[in-house]
Length: 503
Image 1 (cartoon, helix red, strand yellow):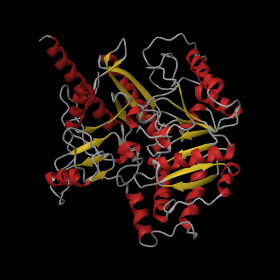
Image 2: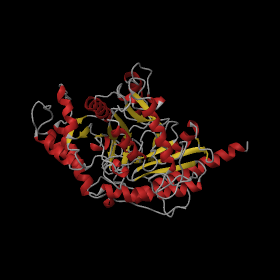
Image 3: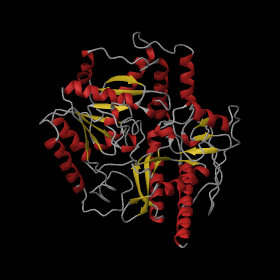
Image 4: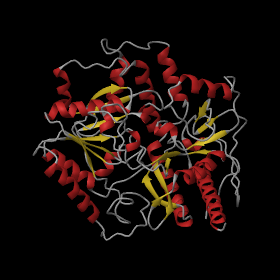
Protein backbone atom coordinates (compact mmCIF):
# COMPACT_ATOMS: atom_id res chain seq x y z
CA UNK A 1 0.00 0.00 0.00
CA UNK A 2 1.46 3.31 -1.00
CA UNK A 3 1.70 5.85 1.81
CA UNK A 4 1.74 8.86 -0.45
CA UNK A 5 0.73 9.66 -4.00
CA UNK A 6 0.37 12.97 -5.69
CA UNK A 7 -2.47 15.31 -6.44
CA UNK A 8 -0.22 17.92 -7.98
CA UNK A 9 3.42 17.77 -8.94
CA UNK A 10 5.53 20.70 -10.07
CA UNK A 11 8.97 20.19 -11.55
CA UNK A 12 10.87 23.28 -12.63
CA UNK A 13 14.03 23.67 -14.62
CA UNK A 14 17.03 22.21 -12.85
CA UNK A 15 19.35 24.67 -11.23
CA UNK A 16 21.20 22.28 -8.98
CA UNK A 17 20.88 18.80 -7.48
CA UNK A 18 17.68 16.91 -8.18
CA UNK A 19 16.37 17.36 -4.66
CA UNK A 20 16.17 21.16 -5.05
CA UNK A 21 13.18 21.08 -7.38
CA UNK A 22 9.85 22.47 -6.17
CA UNK A 23 7.19 19.86 -5.54
CA UNK A 24 3.72 20.03 -4.09
CA UNK A 25 2.17 16.87 -2.68
CA UNK A 26 -0.98 15.76 -0.96
CA UNK A 27 -1.86 12.30 0.31
CA UNK A 28 -4.79 10.73 -1.52
CA UNK A 29 -6.54 7.41 -1.26
CA UNK A 30 -7.97 6.70 -4.70
CA UNK A 31 -7.54 8.40 -8.08
CA UNK A 32 -4.15 10.14 -8.48
CA UNK A 33 -4.97 13.14 -10.64
CA UNK A 34 -2.70 14.10 -13.49
CA UNK A 35 -0.02 16.41 -12.20
CA UNK A 36 -0.19 20.02 -13.40
CA UNK A 37 2.96 21.94 -12.50
CA UNK A 38 1.76 25.18 -14.07
CA UNK A 39 -0.08 26.13 -17.19
CA UNK A 40 1.77 24.61 -20.15
CA UNK A 41 4.12 27.09 -21.80
CA UNK A 42 2.67 28.88 -24.79
CA UNK A 43 2.93 27.03 -28.08
CA UNK A 44 3.06 29.10 -31.27
CA UNK A 45 3.86 26.41 -33.83
CA UNK A 46 1.72 24.61 -36.37
CA UNK A 47 -1.59 23.19 -35.21
CA UNK A 48 -1.82 19.55 -34.15
CA UNK A 49 -3.92 18.77 -37.21
CA UNK A 50 -1.39 20.39 -39.54
CA UNK A 51 1.50 18.49 -38.00
CA UNK A 52 -0.37 15.19 -38.42
CA UNK A 53 -1.05 16.04 -42.05
CA UNK A 54 2.57 16.98 -42.77
CA UNK A 55 3.84 13.87 -41.01
CA UNK A 56 1.72 11.61 -43.17
CA UNK A 57 2.61 13.50 -46.34
CA UNK A 58 6.38 13.96 -46.00
CA UNK A 59 7.82 11.41 -43.55
CA UNK A 60 8.40 7.82 -44.59
CA UNK A 61 5.54 5.59 -43.39
CA UNK A 62 7.79 3.56 -41.07
CA UNK A 63 8.14 6.61 -38.79
CA UNK A 64 5.57 5.72 -36.17
CA UNK A 65 4.53 7.37 -32.91
CA UNK A 66 3.56 6.16 -29.47
CA UNK A 67 -0.09 6.21 -28.44
CA UNK A 68 -3.39 6.15 -30.29
CA UNK A 69 -3.34 9.93 -30.38
CA UNK A 70 0.37 10.83 -30.62
CA UNK A 71 1.67 13.61 -28.41
CA UNK A 72 2.97 16.84 -29.90
CA UNK A 73 5.75 17.69 -27.46
CA UNK A 74 7.18 21.19 -27.76
CA UNK A 75 9.09 21.78 -24.52
CA UNK A 76 11.02 19.88 -21.87
CA UNK A 77 12.40 20.81 -18.47
CA UNK A 78 14.05 18.48 -15.98
CA UNK A 79 11.86 15.37 -15.91
CA UNK A 80 8.88 17.16 -17.46
CA UNK A 81 7.59 17.25 -21.03
CA UNK A 82 4.86 19.56 -22.32
CA UNK A 83 2.38 19.37 -25.15
CA UNK A 84 -0.22 21.99 -25.98
CA UNK A 85 -2.54 20.99 -23.16
CA UNK A 86 -0.68 19.51 -20.21
CA UNK A 87 2.57 18.35 -18.69
CA UNK A 88 3.90 14.82 -18.36
CA UNK A 89 6.34 13.13 -16.04
CA UNK A 90 8.87 11.62 -18.46
CA UNK A 91 9.78 8.14 -17.22
CA UNK A 92 11.42 7.08 -20.48
CA UNK A 93 13.92 9.89 -21.05
CA UNK A 94 13.65 10.02 -24.83
CA UNK A 95 14.43 6.28 -25.06
CA UNK A 96 17.03 6.25 -22.27
CA UNK A 97 18.77 9.26 -23.77
CA UNK A 98 18.00 12.25 -21.55
CA UNK A 99 20.40 11.46 -18.72
CA UNK A 100 20.70 14.69 -16.71
CA UNK A 101 17.31 16.26 -17.47
CA UNK A 102 15.62 18.02 -20.35
CA UNK A 103 17.25 21.34 -21.23
CA UNK A 104 19.64 21.23 -18.29
CA UNK A 105 20.89 24.82 -17.83
CA UNK A 106 24.58 23.87 -17.58
CA UNK A 107 24.44 21.71 -20.70
CA UNK A 108 22.47 24.40 -22.53
CA UNK A 109 25.04 27.02 -21.55
CA UNK A 110 27.96 24.87 -22.74
CA UNK A 111 26.31 24.34 -26.11
CA UNK A 112 25.41 28.02 -26.50
CA UNK A 113 28.94 29.12 -25.67
CA UNK A 114 30.45 26.69 -28.17
CA UNK A 115 28.11 27.51 -31.03
CA UNK A 116 29.15 31.16 -30.77
CA UNK A 117 32.80 30.26 -31.36
CA UNK A 118 33.12 27.14 -33.54
CA UNK A 119 30.60 24.68 -34.92
CA UNK A 120 32.62 22.37 -37.11
CA UNK A 121 36.06 21.61 -38.50
CA UNK A 122 36.20 17.77 -38.65
CA UNK A 123 39.28 15.98 -37.41
CA UNK A 124 41.49 17.15 -40.28
CA UNK A 125 42.27 20.02 -37.87
CA UNK A 126 42.72 19.92 -34.14
CA UNK A 127 40.29 21.74 -31.88
CA UNK A 128 40.55 21.92 -28.09
CA UNK A 129 37.15 20.51 -27.07
CA UNK A 130 37.82 17.13 -28.68
CA UNK A 131 40.97 16.57 -26.67
CA UNK A 132 39.56 17.96 -23.44
CA UNK A 133 36.56 15.68 -23.74
CA UNK A 134 38.58 12.58 -24.65
CA UNK A 135 40.70 13.00 -21.54
CA UNK A 136 37.67 13.45 -19.25
CA UNK A 137 35.74 10.54 -20.76
CA UNK A 138 38.46 7.89 -20.68
CA UNK A 139 39.26 8.86 -17.09
CA UNK A 140 35.91 7.26 -16.25
CA UNK A 141 36.99 3.88 -17.66
CA UNK A 142 39.19 1.22 -16.04
CA UNK A 143 42.30 -0.58 -17.18
CA UNK A 144 43.68 -0.03 -20.67
CA UNK A 145 40.46 1.46 -22.02
CA UNK A 146 42.12 4.78 -22.82
CA UNK A 147 41.63 5.37 -26.56
CA UNK A 148 38.37 6.79 -27.89
CA UNK A 149 36.84 7.32 -31.33
CA UNK A 150 33.77 9.56 -31.45
CA UNK A 151 30.75 8.87 -33.64
CA UNK A 152 27.14 10.08 -33.74
CA UNK A 153 24.99 7.18 -32.52
CA UNK A 154 24.91 3.77 -30.91
CA UNK A 155 24.47 1.98 -34.22
CA UNK A 156 27.60 3.69 -35.55
CA UNK A 157 29.51 2.79 -32.40
CA UNK A 158 28.56 -0.88 -32.67
CA UNK A 159 29.29 -0.90 -36.40
CA UNK A 160 32.81 0.29 -35.68
CA UNK A 161 33.29 -2.12 -32.79
CA UNK A 162 32.36 -5.04 -35.04
CA UNK A 163 34.90 -3.95 -37.61
CA UNK A 164 37.64 -3.44 -35.01
CA UNK A 165 37.04 -6.89 -33.49
CA UNK A 166 37.27 -8.58 -36.87
CA UNK A 167 40.35 -6.64 -37.92
CA UNK A 168 42.18 -7.19 -34.65
CA UNK A 169 41.51 -10.91 -34.33
CA UNK A 170 41.55 -11.80 -38.00
CA UNK A 171 38.36 -13.79 -37.32
CA UNK A 172 34.88 -13.30 -38.73
CA UNK A 173 32.36 -14.83 -36.33
CA UNK A 174 30.63 -12.73 -33.68
CA UNK A 175 28.21 -13.79 -30.96
CA UNK A 176 25.33 -11.82 -29.47
CA UNK A 177 22.29 -12.83 -27.44
CA UNK A 178 18.81 -13.68 -28.54
CA UNK A 179 16.63 -10.76 -27.46
CA UNK A 180 19.57 -8.36 -27.90
CA UNK A 181 19.35 -4.97 -29.55
CA UNK A 182 22.57 -3.38 -30.84
CA UNK A 183 21.28 -1.14 -33.62
CA UNK A 184 19.29 -1.14 -36.84
CA UNK A 185 21.91 -0.35 -39.46
CA UNK A 186 22.45 -3.05 -42.10
CA UNK A 187 25.62 -4.12 -40.24
CA UNK A 188 24.29 -4.14 -36.66
CA UNK A 189 20.94 -5.62 -37.66
CA UNK A 190 22.68 -8.98 -37.61
CA UNK A 191 23.61 -8.49 -33.96
CA UNK A 192 20.04 -7.50 -33.08
CA UNK A 193 18.01 -10.63 -32.39
CA UNK A 194 14.41 -9.41 -32.49
CA UNK A 195 12.35 -10.43 -35.50
CA UNK A 196 10.44 -7.15 -35.24
CA UNK A 197 13.63 -5.17 -35.96
CA UNK A 198 14.96 -7.25 -38.87
CA UNK A 199 14.45 -6.86 -42.61
CA UNK A 200 14.80 -9.84 -44.98
CA UNK A 201 18.15 -8.74 -46.42
CA UNK A 202 20.84 -11.03 -47.73
CA UNK A 203 24.04 -11.12 -45.70
CA UNK A 204 22.63 -9.59 -42.51
CA UNK A 205 23.54 -12.69 -40.51
CA UNK A 206 26.96 -13.11 -42.09
CA UNK A 207 29.13 -14.54 -39.33
CA UNK A 208 26.65 -13.71 -36.54
CA UNK A 209 25.52 -16.31 -33.99
CA UNK A 210 22.81 -15.73 -31.39
CA UNK A 211 23.34 -17.42 -28.03
CA UNK A 212 20.51 -18.52 -25.77
CA UNK A 213 19.51 -15.59 -23.59
CA UNK A 214 20.25 -16.30 -19.90
CA UNK A 215 16.98 -14.75 -18.71
CA UNK A 216 15.94 -15.87 -15.19
CA UNK A 217 12.27 -14.95 -15.74
CA UNK A 218 11.23 -16.17 -19.20
CA UNK A 219 14.22 -18.37 -20.03
CA UNK A 220 14.36 -22.14 -19.66
CA UNK A 221 16.28 -21.91 -16.37
CA UNK A 222 16.46 -19.46 -13.53
CA UNK A 223 14.47 -18.10 -10.65
CA UNK A 224 14.39 -16.17 -7.43
CA UNK A 225 18.12 -16.37 -6.61
CA UNK A 226 19.55 -15.77 -10.06
CA UNK A 227 19.90 -12.09 -10.84
CA UNK A 228 21.70 -9.06 -9.49
CA UNK A 229 18.75 -6.84 -8.64
CA UNK A 230 17.03 -5.43 -5.54
CA UNK A 231 13.97 -7.36 -6.77
CA UNK A 232 14.05 -11.04 -7.69
CA UNK A 233 11.58 -12.96 -9.80
CA UNK A 234 8.99 -15.02 -7.91
CA UNK A 235 9.83 -18.05 -10.05
CA UNK A 236 11.07 -21.01 -7.97
CA UNK A 237 14.76 -21.81 -8.09
CA UNK A 238 17.10 -24.55 -6.82
CA UNK A 239 20.14 -22.27 -6.68
CA UNK A 240 21.98 -21.75 -3.41
CA UNK A 241 23.67 -18.61 -2.10
CA UNK A 242 26.78 -17.95 -4.19
CA UNK A 243 25.99 -20.62 -6.77
CA UNK A 244 23.70 -20.16 -9.77
CA UNK A 245 22.84 -23.48 -11.38
CA UNK A 246 21.00 -21.65 -14.14
CA UNK A 247 24.24 -19.94 -15.17
CA UNK A 248 25.92 -23.33 -15.48
CA UNK A 249 23.22 -24.55 -17.85
CA UNK A 250 23.12 -21.38 -19.96
CA UNK A 251 26.91 -21.43 -20.15
CA UNK A 252 26.77 -25.00 -21.48
CA UNK A 253 24.53 -23.73 -24.26
CA UNK A 254 27.07 -21.04 -25.12
CA UNK A 255 29.78 -23.69 -25.27
CA UNK A 256 27.70 -25.53 -27.86
CA UNK A 257 28.15 -22.61 -30.26
CA UNK A 258 31.91 -22.86 -29.90
CA UNK A 259 31.82 -26.63 -30.36
CA UNK A 260 29.52 -26.82 -33.35
CA UNK A 261 29.17 -23.45 -35.09
CA UNK A 262 32.60 -21.75 -35.01
CA UNK A 263 35.98 -22.56 -36.47
CA UNK A 264 37.87 -24.15 -33.60
CA UNK A 265 39.49 -21.50 -31.42
CA UNK A 266 38.50 -18.69 -33.75
CA UNK A 267 35.94 -16.06 -32.80
CA UNK A 268 36.12 -12.30 -33.42
CA UNK A 269 34.10 -11.27 -30.40
CA UNK A 270 30.95 -11.25 -28.35
CA UNK A 271 28.58 -8.32 -27.80
CA UNK A 272 26.47 -7.94 -24.68
CA UNK A 273 24.33 -5.17 -23.26
CA UNK A 274 24.98 -5.03 -19.54
CA UNK A 275 21.20 -5.03 -19.10
CA UNK A 276 19.14 -5.59 -22.23
CA UNK A 277 17.27 -2.40 -23.11
CA UNK A 278 14.87 -2.81 -26.04
CA UNK A 279 14.49 -6.44 -24.98
CA UNK A 280 12.64 -5.31 -21.85
CA UNK A 281 15.29 -4.51 -19.21
CA UNK A 282 16.31 -8.15 -19.04
CA UNK A 283 19.10 -9.10 -16.64
CA UNK A 284 21.25 -12.18 -16.99
CA UNK A 285 21.87 -14.92 -14.46
CA UNK A 286 24.60 -14.16 -11.94
CA UNK A 287 28.16 -14.72 -13.10
CA UNK A 288 27.25 -15.57 -16.68
CA UNK A 289 28.83 -12.55 -18.37
CA UNK A 290 32.16 -13.01 -16.62
CA UNK A 291 32.37 -16.63 -17.67
CA UNK A 292 31.28 -15.79 -21.21
CA UNK A 293 34.00 -13.15 -21.53
CA UNK A 294 36.62 -15.66 -20.39
CA UNK A 295 35.41 -18.21 -22.95
CA UNK A 296 35.49 -15.66 -25.77
CA UNK A 297 39.03 -14.56 -24.93
CA UNK A 298 40.21 -18.17 -24.65
CA UNK A 299 39.09 -18.59 -28.26
CA UNK A 300 40.88 -15.53 -29.58
CA UNK A 301 38.03 -13.04 -29.42
CA UNK A 302 37.28 -9.67 -27.85
CA UNK A 303 34.45 -8.97 -25.43
CA UNK A 304 32.43 -5.86 -26.33
CA UNK A 305 30.22 -4.19 -23.71
CA UNK A 306 27.32 -2.23 -25.20
CA UNK A 307 26.78 0.59 -22.68
CA UNK A 308 24.52 2.65 -24.95
CA UNK A 309 21.68 2.43 -22.40
CA UNK A 310 23.29 1.21 -19.18
CA UNK A 311 26.25 3.58 -18.96
CA UNK A 312 26.93 6.90 -17.22
CA UNK A 313 25.70 5.95 -13.76
CA UNK A 314 22.23 4.77 -14.72
CA UNK A 315 22.53 1.41 -12.97
CA UNK A 316 23.39 3.18 -9.72
CA UNK A 317 25.98 0.94 -8.09
CA UNK A 318 28.52 1.58 -10.84
CA UNK A 319 29.28 4.15 -13.49
CA UNK A 320 29.23 1.44 -16.16
CA UNK A 321 26.90 -1.51 -16.31
CA UNK A 322 29.73 -3.94 -17.08
CA UNK A 323 31.25 -3.23 -13.67
CA UNK A 324 28.27 -5.02 -12.15
CA UNK A 325 29.46 -8.16 -13.97
CA UNK A 326 32.98 -7.87 -12.54
CA UNK A 327 34.70 -7.57 -15.93
CA UNK A 328 36.78 -5.09 -17.91
CA UNK A 329 35.75 -5.41 -21.58
CA UNK A 330 38.10 -5.13 -24.53
CA UNK A 331 35.84 -2.59 -26.23
CA UNK A 332 33.07 -0.38 -24.84
CA UNK A 333 30.43 1.27 -27.01
CA UNK A 334 28.31 4.16 -25.77
CA UNK A 335 25.73 6.69 -26.99
CA UNK A 336 22.30 8.02 -25.88
CA UNK A 337 22.88 9.38 -22.33
CA UNK A 338 26.42 10.43 -23.27
CA UNK A 339 24.97 13.56 -24.89
CA UNK A 340 21.64 14.04 -23.05
CA UNK A 341 19.89 14.07 -26.41
CA UNK A 342 22.64 15.58 -28.57
CA UNK A 343 23.78 13.18 -31.34
CA UNK A 344 26.93 11.65 -29.86
CA UNK A 345 28.46 8.22 -29.48
CA UNK A 346 31.85 6.69 -28.80
CA UNK A 347 33.95 3.56 -29.03
CA UNK A 348 36.59 3.14 -26.32
CA UNK A 349 39.30 0.49 -26.39
CA UNK A 350 43.00 -0.02 -25.68
CA UNK A 351 45.81 1.48 -27.74
CA UNK A 352 46.85 -2.01 -28.84
CA UNK A 353 43.41 -2.81 -30.23
CA UNK A 354 42.83 0.67 -31.66
CA UNK A 355 45.97 0.48 -33.77
CA UNK A 356 44.24 -1.83 -36.25
CA UNK A 357 42.30 1.18 -37.57
CA UNK A 358 45.59 2.49 -38.98
CA UNK A 359 45.58 -0.25 -41.64
CA UNK A 360 43.46 1.99 -43.86
CA UNK A 361 41.79 5.39 -43.73
CA UNK A 362 38.74 5.60 -41.52
CA UNK A 363 36.88 8.88 -41.14
CA UNK A 364 33.71 10.22 -39.56
CA UNK A 365 32.84 13.74 -40.70
CA UNK A 366 30.81 14.76 -37.64
CA UNK A 367 32.29 12.47 -34.97
CA UNK A 368 33.82 14.51 -32.16
CA UNK A 369 32.68 17.86 -33.52
CA UNK A 370 33.09 20.88 -31.20
CA UNK A 371 29.38 21.16 -30.34
CA UNK A 372 29.05 17.49 -29.39
CA UNK A 373 32.23 17.57 -27.31
CA UNK A 374 31.12 20.67 -25.41
CA UNK A 375 27.84 18.96 -24.57
CA UNK A 376 29.60 15.73 -23.60
CA UNK A 377 31.90 17.55 -21.17
CA UNK A 378 28.97 19.33 -19.53
CA UNK A 379 27.04 16.06 -19.15
CA UNK A 380 29.98 14.41 -17.37
CA UNK A 381 30.27 17.42 -15.06
CA UNK A 382 26.57 17.43 -14.19
CA UNK A 383 26.53 13.71 -13.42
CA UNK A 384 29.35 14.27 -10.93
CA UNK A 385 28.25 17.60 -9.49
CA UNK A 386 24.66 16.55 -8.90
CA UNK A 387 25.59 13.02 -7.81
CA UNK A 388 23.23 11.49 -10.34
CA UNK A 389 24.79 8.04 -10.10
CA UNK A 390 24.02 8.07 -6.38
CA UNK A 391 20.55 9.42 -7.12
CA UNK A 392 19.98 6.59 -9.61
CA UNK A 393 20.88 4.05 -6.95
CA UNK A 394 18.78 5.58 -4.16
CA UNK A 395 15.69 6.62 -6.12
CA UNK A 396 15.91 3.58 -8.40
CA UNK A 397 16.05 1.13 -5.49
CA UNK A 398 13.19 2.96 -3.78
CA UNK A 399 11.16 2.77 -6.98
CA UNK A 400 11.98 -0.91 -7.54
CA UNK A 401 10.84 -1.82 -4.03
CA UNK A 402 7.61 0.08 -4.61
CA UNK A 403 7.10 -1.80 -7.88
CA UNK A 404 7.76 -5.06 -6.05
CA UNK A 405 4.83 -4.28 -3.76
CA UNK A 406 2.66 -3.59 -6.80
CA UNK A 407 3.74 -6.88 -8.38
CA UNK A 408 2.58 -8.71 -5.26
CA UNK A 409 -0.71 -6.79 -5.34
CA UNK A 410 -1.69 -7.02 -9.02
CA UNK A 411 -2.06 -10.23 -11.02
CA UNK A 412 -1.23 -8.37 -14.22
CA UNK A 413 2.33 -7.55 -13.09
CA UNK A 414 4.44 -10.66 -13.60
CA UNK A 415 7.96 -9.40 -13.02
CA UNK A 416 9.85 -6.33 -11.83
CA UNK A 417 13.58 -6.12 -12.54
CA UNK A 418 16.54 -3.85 -13.05
CA UNK A 419 19.08 -1.78 -11.19
CA UNK A 420 19.19 1.93 -10.53
CA UNK A 421 17.02 3.76 -13.03
CA UNK A 422 17.07 1.02 -15.66
CA UNK A 423 13.87 -0.83 -14.81
CA UNK A 424 11.41 -3.16 -16.49
CA UNK A 425 7.86 -4.08 -15.45
CA UNK A 426 6.60 -7.13 -17.33
CA UNK A 427 2.83 -7.37 -17.71
CA UNK A 428 1.32 -10.83 -18.02
CA UNK A 429 -1.98 -12.53 -18.74
CA UNK A 430 -1.15 -15.36 -16.34
CA UNK A 431 1.36 -15.18 -13.49
CA UNK A 432 1.80 -18.94 -13.22
CA UNK A 433 2.63 -19.56 -16.88
CA UNK A 434 4.24 -16.13 -17.38
CA UNK A 435 2.17 -15.76 -20.57
CA UNK A 436 2.69 -12.24 -21.86
CA UNK A 437 -0.12 -9.72 -21.84
CA UNK A 438 -1.37 -9.25 -25.38
CA UNK A 439 -0.93 -5.93 -27.15
CA UNK A 440 -4.51 -4.58 -26.85
CA UNK A 441 -4.55 -5.23 -23.09
CA UNK A 442 -1.08 -3.78 -22.56
CA UNK A 443 -2.09 -0.68 -24.49
CA UNK A 444 -5.11 -0.22 -22.20
CA UNK A 445 -2.81 0.21 -19.20
CA UNK A 446 -0.13 2.14 -21.08
CA UNK A 447 -2.60 4.64 -22.51
CA UNK A 448 -4.19 5.17 -19.09
CA UNK A 449 -0.77 6.00 -17.65
CA UNK A 450 -0.23 8.58 -20.40
CA UNK A 451 -3.68 10.11 -19.84
CA UNK A 452 -2.79 10.52 -16.17
CA UNK A 453 0.41 12.33 -17.04
CA UNK A 454 3.15 9.67 -16.90
CA UNK A 455 5.07 8.50 -19.97
CA UNK A 456 6.60 5.01 -19.98
CA UNK A 457 8.43 3.20 -22.75
CA UNK A 458 7.40 -0.11 -24.21
CA UNK A 459 9.72 -3.04 -24.82
CA UNK A 460 10.31 -6.77 -24.94
CA UNK A 461 9.86 -9.08 -27.91
CA UNK A 462 6.12 -9.17 -27.21
CA UNK A 463 5.97 -5.43 -26.38
CA UNK A 464 4.53 -6.20 -22.94
CA UNK A 465 7.17 -4.55 -20.75
CA UNK A 466 6.91 -1.05 -19.30
CA UNK A 467 10.38 0.41 -19.82
CA UNK A 468 11.23 2.76 -16.95
CA UNK A 469 14.37 4.75 -17.76
CA UNK A 470 13.73 8.36 -16.72
CA UNK A 471 16.18 11.25 -16.58
CA UNK A 472 18.51 10.47 -13.68
CA UNK A 473 17.42 13.67 -11.90
CA UNK A 474 14.03 12.32 -10.78
CA UNK A 475 13.39 12.13 -7.03
CA UNK A 476 11.25 10.08 -4.68
CA UNK A 477 8.23 12.29 -5.14
CA UNK A 478 8.34 11.64 -8.87
CA UNK A 479 8.68 7.93 -8.14
CA UNK A 480 5.70 8.06 -5.76
CA UNK A 481 3.53 9.63 -8.42
CA UNK A 482 4.60 7.11 -11.07
CA UNK A 483 3.91 4.26 -8.62
CA UNK A 484 0.48 5.66 -7.82
CA UNK A 485 -0.39 5.88 -11.50
CA UNK A 486 0.75 2.30 -12.22
CA UNK A 487 -1.18 1.10 -9.16
CA UNK A 488 -4.35 2.88 -10.21
CA UNK A 489 -4.15 1.86 -13.88
CA UNK A 490 -3.50 -1.80 -13.08
CA UNK A 491 -6.40 -1.76 -10.63
CA UNK A 492 -8.72 -0.25 -13.24
CA UNK A 493 -7.58 -2.77 -15.84
CA UNK A 494 -8.20 -5.73 -13.52
CA UNK A 495 -11.67 -4.44 -12.63
CA UNK A 496 -12.44 -4.05 -16.33
CA UNK A 497 -11.19 -7.58 -17.03
CA UNK A 498 -13.30 -9.05 -14.22
CA UNK A 499 -16.38 -7.24 -15.50
CA UNK A 500 -15.71 -8.64 -18.95
CA UNK A 501 -15.32 -12.20 -17.63
CA UNK A 502 -18.76 -12.02 -16.00
CA UNK A 503 -20.49 -11.15 -19.23
